[in-house]
Length: 498
Length: 126
Image 1 (cartoon, each protein chain N blue to C red):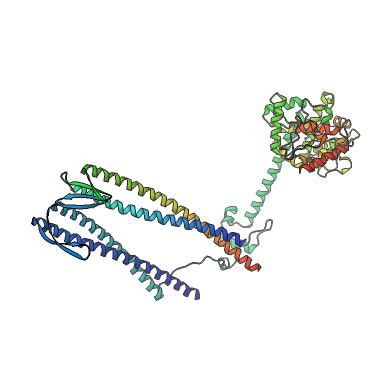
Image 2 (tube, helix red, strand yellow; image 1 turned 90 degrees about the vertical axis):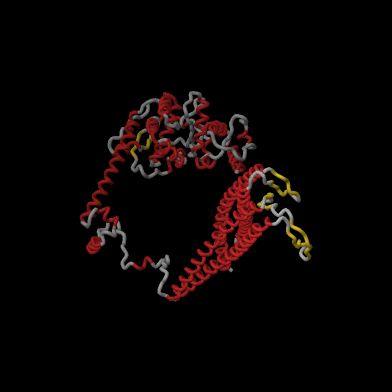
C-alpha cells in the first residue's frame, strides 16, 4: 500500500513537471506570436502608407531629429523608395513595387503566425491531457499497471519440479504427475516422445547403453587400425622420414641431423612442447638439410647408468609410448643399418592381450611382460630420463602429429640395440636432468658465432629467443665433454640469465 | 581506490561538459544559419518580384554598392547554397556529438556507480 502511495506521488510529480514544461513552451510561443502579430500590424500600416504615399508629389512633415527633437521638413520623391530586402540587400523601387514586397512579407509573417498557433494548440492539448492524467491518478479509478521485476517469482509456484537423478527410476506418483502436466514439461515429452512413463525411461537407457557400446567398439577399431599400420611398417627410418614428408605430415623424427655424429647425440636435448620452437626448428632444419624436407631433429638424454631405454615405455600412457618409439626411431637411424636385427615380435596386435606384449620390459635382453601397463614402473630401472621428459611436449606432439603413428612402431624394434649404444655415450650428461632442460628450454644458444661461449660461461645473453634443437645439441656435445664443474657454472649462467 | 575513481570521474565529467558546450555552440550556430536561410529566401523571392529597371544595392560597410539585379540574384543563390551546405555540415556534426555525448554519459554512469561502490566499500572498511 505504501508503495502505491509513493508511486502515485511519483506520478503526480512527473505529471506536474510535464505540465510545467508544456506551459513553458506555450508561453514562449505566445510571446513569439505577439511579436509576429506586431510585425504584421506594422506591415499593415506600412501598406496603408504606401498606398497613399504617391498620391502627392511632396509632403510637409516633421522630421525626427535625434530622439528628442523634430524639425520641419519636406518629403519629396514620394514614389521612390529604397527597401531593405534583408542580408544587407537594398533595392530602389516604386511605391507600387514596395507594396507587393510588403504583401509578400505579410504572407511570410502569416505563415509564421500560423505555425506558432499550431504549436501552441498542440502543447495546450498536451497540457490538458496531462491534467487529465493527474486527475485520473488522483481519482484512484485508474491505476497504472506496474510490474516489478523481483526475486519473488520463484516462490510463487506451488511445487518445484526436481530434475531426475541419473539412474534413478522415477517414482510412480511422480510419473503420474508428469503425465498430467505434459504440456509444461517440454523436454520430457521430447525425450520420451509420450507419457508412457516407465517404459519410456527404460527405452531411453537401453538406447544410451547401445550408444555407449557402439562408441567403445569404434574406439577399439581405431586402435586396432593404428597398430596394424604400425606392424606393416618396416622401412628404414630415413626412407620413412621421406615418406612422411611426402605425406605432408609435419615430421618430428627424433633422429640426428645428418651431419651430427653419434657422440653429441647422446646428451640431453629436450623435446620442447612449444610449437613455435618446433616450427622454427623445422625451418632451420629444412634449410640445412637441403633436401627441403621439413624434418626436425631431436636428441635425447642418455641415462647415466646404462639402463635399458625401453624402460621408458613403462610410463604407461600412449603418449609416452609413442615418444619412446620416436626416440628409438631416431636411435636406430643413428646406429645405422647395423641394428637391423630389430625385434619384430611385439607389434602385431590382434587381441587386447597383445597390447601387453607391446609394453614389455627388456630384462637381460629378454622381453618380460609387464604386469600393468597403466602403472609406471618403479624408479629403480627407469632412471632413463627420456621417459620422464616433458609429457606436455609429448602430448603436444601427439596432438599435432596423430597421423604419424607408424613411425613410432618401427622404432620399437631397435630397442635392444639402442640400449647398447647408450652405453658408450658420455657421462657428463647426467648433470642435466630433463626437468632442468625443460626449464631451460626458453633459451637459444647460438652455436656458430661464439662457439666458446658455453665453456666460458660469460656470455649467455639474457634474452635468447628460442632453442634450436640442433644447436643446443651441438652445444650440449661441447658441454658433455666438459667436466662436471663447468657444468655447474653453466647452471650459474642460467641463473644469471634469469 | 575511491580517489582514483573520483579523479577519473572528474576528468570524464569535464570532457562531457566540454562536449556539451560544443553541442550548444553548434546548436546556436545552426539556429543562426537557419535564420539566415529564411532571410535569404525572402530576399531571393523579393528579388524575383523586382524587374530590370530596379537598381539593387548591397550594403558593404558604410556604403551602398550598386549591383546588377542578375548578379544580385546569382549572389543570393550562391549564398543560399552555402548556407544549406553549412546547415548540413552542422547536422552531421551535431549527430556525431550526440553519439559522443551518449558514450560519455554511459561512461559517466558506470564510473559513478563504481565510485559509489568504492566509496561504500571504504566507508564499510572504516
